[in-house]
Structures are given as C-alpha cells and as structure tokens.
Amino acid sequence: MLQGQKISRQSQVTVGSVPSDHVRADSAERYALSTPERKHPTAALLTVPVTAALALGIHFLVAKKEPPNESRTYTIVLGSFFAGAIVAAVMQRWWPALQTRMRRFRPLFTVGVLLLCVWEIITSGFRMLPLPYFPSPAGVVQSMINDRGLLFDSTWHSLVLLLSGYLLGVAAGLVTGVCIGWSAPARYWGMPLLKVVGPIPATAWIPLAMVVSPSALISAAALIALAVWFPVTMLTASGISNTRASYLDVARTLGANARYLVFRIAIPAALPSIFVGLFMGLGASFLTLVVAESVGVKSGLGWYVSWAQGWAEYGKVYAALVIMAVFFSTIMTLLFKLRDRVLVWQKGMIRW
Amino acid sequence: MAKGNDSVVASSVQLRDVGKSFPAPDQPLTRRPVLETISVSLEAGELVSLVGPSGCGKSTLLRLVAGLDFPDSGELLVDEEPISGPSAERGLVFQDPNLFPWLTVRRNIEAGLAARGLLQQKRSEVKEFMRLVGLEAFADAYPHHLSGGMAQRVALARALINHPKVLLLDEPLGALDAFTRMRMQDEVLRLWQNRRTTMLLVTHDIDEAIYMSDRIIILTQRPGTIEQIIPIALDRPRDRSSSDFLLLRSEILELLHFAGNRSSQVTA
Image (cartoon, rainbow over the protein chains, first blue to last red):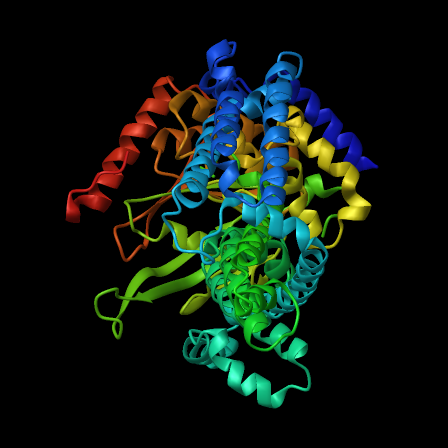
C-alpha cells in the first residue's frame, strides 16, 4: 500500500518531464514514400489480358497439331486466365488491395504467360523437341486433369510423411541444439558427433534404413528427421552460444535463474539463427522426401514421378513436378509467415 | 527483499583490499592486475561516483559489486554479508541499455518481476514504473524504435522494478547527447532522492560526477588503485556554473591528469 502511494507521488513529478526525444520517423512513412499513390495507366493495366490473348491466339494457330481433347482443355485454361485477367483489371479500380497486388505481379504474370507461349511454339508448333520426353503445355494440363485422383492422393501422402519427419527432426534438433549451445559438457561430447555424422547426406543412410526398419514409411520419416536435425541443431547451437553476454548479465542482475536464462533470454536471442536452421532443414527435407519416395516408399509425389517415368508418361512427370513446386513453395511460404510473426520485433531493424 | 517500505531500504557496501587480475590477451599464462588494494565503504543511501582514466578497472569494480565476477583477493560485503553472486538486490545499468530486443517496452520492464516469478502478484507496479520514467505511451513499442534517452530510461525502470538496495550504473548516460544527458542526470537524481538507494556511478564525465555525487572516487591508471576520495559538499540542486563547482572541477582535472600522466591520457 505504502509502496503504491510512494510511486504515484513520484510519478507526478514525471509528468512535467515527458520525453521530448521522440520515436524515430516510423516505417509507415518510409513505405508510403516508396510506393507513390498513382493510378495505373490503362496501357499497363492491359498487359496481362493482352498477353493472355496472345497465348490464346498462338494456341489456336498450333491447335490442329495437338490431340483435340488436350487442345480443348488448354483452351479452357487459357480462356479462364484471360477472363480472370480482364475481370481483375476492371475490379482493381474499386479494390485497392487487388490494385497493389496487380501492380506487384503484373510483370511476373506477363513473362510467365509469354514463357508458356514459347513452350507451346517449340513443342506443338515446330516439334523441335523429341516426344514423349517434352510434351506441350496442353499435354501436361491434360495429364494433370486425367490423373487428378492419384495426384491428390500422392500429394496427401507426401504431406503426411513430410510433416511427420520434419516436425520430429525440428523437435530433436531444437533439444540437442539448445543443449550443445548452452552446456559445456554437452558441447564437448555433442559437437564432434555433430561434425562427423551431420554432414553425411541423410539419403546416404538409405541402405541401412532399409535393413533396420520394419516399414519403409517409418524409415523414410526417420531419414527426413535426420536430414532436418543436422541444420536445426547446428544453427540453434550457434545461436544460443552467440547470445550477447550482456543480455545474460543483465538478466542475472534482475534475479534470473538458469531456467529463465535459457528459455527467456538465450532461446529468444537465438531465434533468428534458429529460423535459418528451420529453412535449411525444410530444403533438406524436400530432397530427402523425394528420394525416399522414389526408392522405398510406395506412395507420394516422388513415387508418382518415378512410376510415371517408368511408363514413359512424361506429361504426368511434369504434372507432378508442377504440383511439387506449388506444394513445396506453399510450405516454404507458411514457414516465412511464421517467421514474420515470431520475429516481428526485428521488423525495421534488418532488411527482410 | 521488496517489502512495503522499500524506499528507505538501502544497503551499505564495503570493499576490503579488493584485487582482480585477468589473463593478458597476448600471453594467456600471465595474469595482468586490473585492480589492486581497493578499500572503500559506501554508506547506505549514498551516491558515489567512480572516475578514472580509461582501462583503470572502473567497470570491473562494478561487475565485482554486481556479483558477475569474483575478486582474486580481498572481500566485498553488502550489509556485512559477502557477495556470492548476482542478485536482484543489486541492479546494474550499462552504457548500452541492453534492452531485450524481442520484448516490448512493457515486457522489458516486467522482466525483473518475471525472472523472479513475481509478475502475477506485482503486475500493477509495472504501470507505475512506466509512468515513473515517462514511457506509458510507448508500452507496446519494440526497443529499436526508441531513441537513446528513452531506451536508457527503460533500462533504468527495468532495474528499479526489483527495488534494488544498490544501483550500479556503468556510464549509463555516456552515449547520450549533451542535452539529453543533462536532463537524464536530473532524472536519475530525482529517482535517487525519492528512493534513496545506494548508487555507485561509473562515469567519464567530471561535471556529471560533481553534479551528482556525494563523493567521488578517483582511480589511478591500471592497475587501478584509489588515488583519492573527494567529498562534494555542495548544496543540492547544484549549479554547474557556480564558482565552487568550477573550482572543484579544475582540482579534479589536475588530479586525473596526474593519475593518467603515465600515458599522457586525460579523461575529461
């Protein structure tokens, strides 16, 4: 009670000395300057629809050289893209969020559609590349639609396997990384092991995994976990051991115990480094997933690719590759979003 | 620890023949003395400054009192008890505010309570301390949005929320510009006058030492020993341009010049 009164009396003194030093000109202003509020010139608005129309035109020119059902499907795909581009160009006038997005992605979309045109001209148009290895875009789209059930199923199996392996590896990597980074004995024994065993690519363990494990699925998950474990451990340990000594000193003079020092100081301070490890581990997990699926596991996108290749159905191979690209980059994006949330305190401190 | 009437709780600090050495950076087997035979007593509630040439061990001395390092010889006592390690009863503020960048201003100030597991029962104090240092408006800002003076105020509030009986200040205002610095000197004095904790202030700035302290300890060039202890008898609030102030200032400058003349290094 006494304490409260004491402080409130002191605080009255403060009112007069409200800080005259101020928060630095905040980021909002800087960003506002970098994207000036100007209208889309009409010509620029039309680039995407015009390129889509061009793609449609080229497609009609070469369509007679393609199987009719492929050609029809691809017409529908390009047509809906064209329609979507027109709708977006009109809608953006009343929808500011769409407008900023269009401004950002217009060049990318334009070049993307142009590349599709080039692909179609080279394959269906002039038949410059040997079949069946290089199908036209229409062929790939058709394979994707024909085999959608199996592709969906394979994606689902890949997702389950990837997540179980990745999360296991991350959990193990965080635990070992924190131990090695924090405690000297753990560092002494753990570091040599990490340095010798870690750099072996996880896929090199496949022969051993096949012998030891009861099921291909379990051994694949373990291999992915191993592939993730190494970078996560390495970067967690280095992040923890590089915690600024003065943060720890301050915390100790604030009365912190060891638990607080590890979980509230060292780990938050190491998070930027830990996220680098998580990203590296994610890349390693994609690689291991696909290899494991193509040699042992009888499901998933990696299996699908080698299976389709066995039947020389290259349209399906490319369809699976397209799905893989979308699938993996979606997961990568989700990890970026997580990082942006967790490391929001870095915003304005570093470029990201 | 933090009882009802903390404002009158302060500790006395005694240093008896304290010596400290560190391994030389070029020859790790030989140890180079940094502090030798330091003996001084701080009374409870006293504000004492530590002035001396660069590298004379001022910061080392402060770390010893904080309990972050241990002396090679001699003993350090707080309220007659030997110092066994860092404690929330001895707060420390560095020149770099060292705010935890991943925590907002509010959470930085709360850290002292959270570290001791007292956040739930003392949460109401956090707001008071933010008001005390004039930062309520920035409660949810992250540290890198703050100016140097504001960040240092947060660091002060973070140290003060534990009601330390001794506050150790390692050039806390050294990185601030002249105007902010003078205002912060008044703020630190106001905090000290309200709370009456014992304060040990390391500074490079002789004006700051004279303006703020009850006594000034002048250390010699490394290895640091106590050159002289000068009581400052001027009435508070002090006038930086009074003749007594200026006289003291030139005396101390003289002393420091003597203390530092082996390397012709004058700290002013």
